[in-house]
Image (cartoon, rainbow, N blue to C red; front, side, top):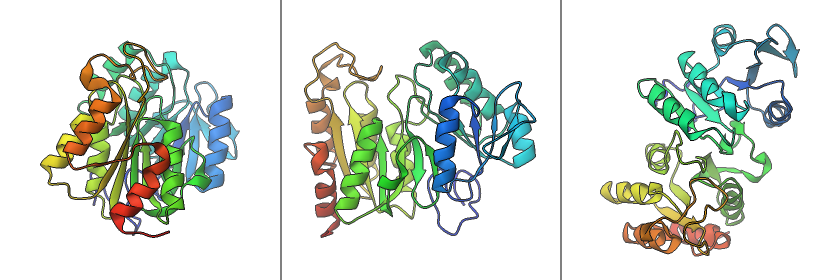
Length: 304
């Protein structure tokens, strides 16, 4: 039993697995179509999709519904991935939560911060987990890919990845695999100022997951998510080994770097300050993305 209800799969996993029934919101649009095809090809159990005013049609051999509620009633879906344009994506998240979806993955970039404030408040008393927005999604290798990441990079194994950055998620996975290990689940939490699942919450999922032996935590400049996670890990007594990496070591102060949340405000926002906090909390810090796999292999006593 997990906090997301009973998992029928004998292999426990974090957030998604081969039994996840996935719907795509924004199913018939170009992005929704492209990534839904990739997810289906990967083996994800995509059971249908939602596009208002297109209900009753089929798309990619799957049914299209007008609302999430209709999709859930008809398919029993428990996971949704959102490719809805930014102006409507906040509503799409709330609609999914209202309909009883348990895991909502918001890929959309550029959702107004004001909308996300409302979404965050709305989700407060709902029994669901939001990942994102502006994220690559979640993948449990060999089980389900609910996102836009290249599936072939992720080989099955026992290392969990939590990352603010999409491309660094793939890089870390590749490093871990090349170093002779594999991935249990990778969660791209997104780089926006207001996100559904924080670094600490993702780390906590992995700490509680019997399928995960070690964790890679990738952060970036700006905000306090990494410090919060590091302090929590230390307070728990460092139950599993964690390798950390912070992107943005060369970032100038006061400039947003790529992600809206990646801005150096004060001293504690810099990469160097964050790396110091991580190290003080017993996390092994990788100096560059290229050494993540190697550092993890040393921690785990693995020789590739």
